[in-house]
Image (cartoon, rainbow, N blue to C red; front, side):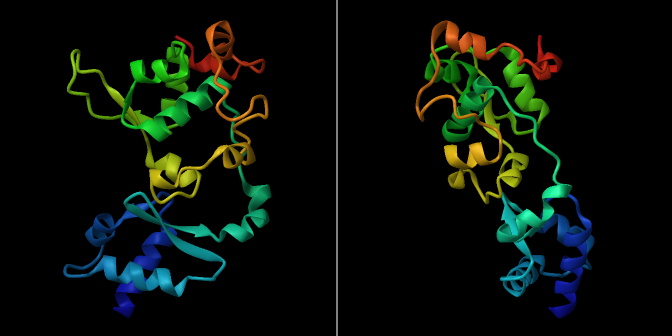
Amino acid sequence: MAEQERMCEAILFATAEPITIREMEARMPHGCDAAEAVQHLRRRYEGRGVQLVKVGDAWAMRTAPDLGYLMQKETVETRKLSRAAIETLAIIAYHQPVTRAEIEEIRGVSVSRGTVDQLLEMEWIRFGRRKMTPGRPVTFVVTQDFLDHFGLESARDLPGLKELRAAGLLENRAPPGDLPTGSEAEDEDEPDPKGQDELFKD
């Protein structure tokens, strides 16, 4: 088992993206138990500068949360999303799988294609299964990249407004639950002053 731990450790350090147990076992000699080795590694790294964390159904080495400030100079600044994009992302995250029509019903205003395209381009949402309703509408769900960005094991551990603001993705422009309606919401779907949404327009 010690040798299997070493193999899993090497794979995890060399892999840029989270990796599943099945993917690890595919690289290891036949008969290896990556699941047990990973559990041993997880315990061994508890309290260390790096930790072994679960991201969805995959695993990854990540800096201990309390030491994140040491990496600030190496962190790429995340592009701020529009208020409309944040609301759309939050609805998808908390109501997934959800259709465009359901998103629009919750927001009370139509969702521009540019907003959805931006979230798809960032790989924070993806297409889910079609609903068994008339028209078989496609649904949206959040991705493993979304979970990884916020350090979540699953969608059950979703961040609140405080975490979104701390990540620089939400401005303090409205109290919680204050969703825009009518022309106000439509304006939020317009490109921001820096032109960031221009790449995602129809």
